[in-house]
Length: 91
Image (cartoon, rainbow, N blue to C red; front, side, top):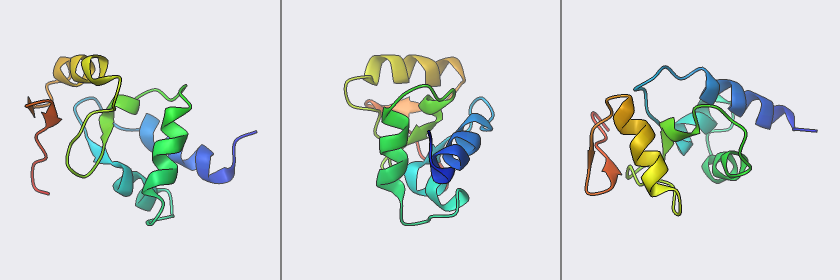
């Protein structure tokens, strides 16, 4: 059974529009726990959350081991990438 925080994180991530990027920290803050970026990463690592590819670390790094898939999905949504990282605009 997912925790309340996991349920909120899932809702935040699944509500992201195509082409929208958030960091793990931004998702955590939106979910009510601004210091829980690592917890967000662990929740997403479990899988089963649509839109997971719209979440990156604060440096724009792609998910280790899933870089090709992550890049493919982001590029399909028009997200700019360079050298295997998301171009983080305005951050």
